[in-house]
Image (cartoon, rainbow, N blue to C red):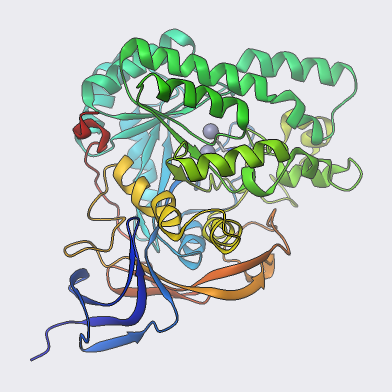
Length: 471
Ligand code: URP
Ligand code: ZN
Ligand code: ZN
């Protein structure tokens, strides 16, 4: 008698620890057997392919309102469609609190936007922009207990920045409630100062965004966030680390035994500030405006070293898509007057895994195990989804990505599923692409084609594993 619903047969199974040839047996959306010669009602032949835990993109922005009226290109449907095509089975978007808004009401808004529209599973981080006594004393603790076990704070952006006292208050709540704080570490006053100076000198093209968001300002804020976390004795994640200088602060903290975790993103390994020049300092550079901005080749080298040596725990996209053309886009009339008004953020949820695989694994810079750790297992562990997600093991959700390590083709906007009108990685040659994405035993994407019905669920999360590691 055959009681497996599905067998993924003949592939090379890769986890964060090892790789081996095996069949995977799936029943009711879970992995129930790993072995040789398995048979089931259905069989997918994975010969010649890698079988990876589904990608987990722990940093994406979907359907977020902006204060200046620009519109995020992706909603939950298009953003998760794009994620699925790119080999992801879970994404972690943000529920962004607008100042004055109840955090609970904000979460319910985002849950409504996501419900029934997601092609991958989703789990929300919170963004705390208004840490009132009500938020700190009641809403945030209650939300953490309801499974929203991580939240992001900003050290810059007029409408999001928290001052040092507020950061310390939020860190206190995180420590008490065993939540994980993600920190956007860029020094607000330094950026404002540099922006004013550049504008006074007439340096307003998108390129100058990279000068205004200087690496020194990122380094300073990274150290400040670490110091605050040390004072409170709370773990933090420094997100979207762009270069050598903030990395050195993270290494400084780790050398002292502090629980400081780090994330980096595709833009910091394959783009540089030079891309913001566009064609001869024109507005095309706006396509690459994100914060922190891409740096230089020296920082790329440092980041690769950090991806190898464990300075970085996770590799996320920071998918934050704005259309380049049209109304409410990057190319809006105000943005033409100064880089300060160009919406910050670039798309990347569909290209994150191919870029890291191609530049990392195919070019021999990182191992397959490290690739899986950075893109699936570690995000699951850090954000309270493990072992349901992020592993290929008995009992885990059957979230799998079949990967062709030899398939070579360029990234092309025309092939992508996001609702953005460009990719910053146009024509980048990639070796290694996802060919099938399987969510809880059900194929959701094949070679860029995503099945139309949206079967993703919202996940509730446990506390981050770092609270139970005891180190
Ligand atoms: O430029 C970026 N990264 N925009 C997204 C918001 C953020 O800070 O992550
Ligand atoms: Zn950020
Ligand atoms: Zn972000």
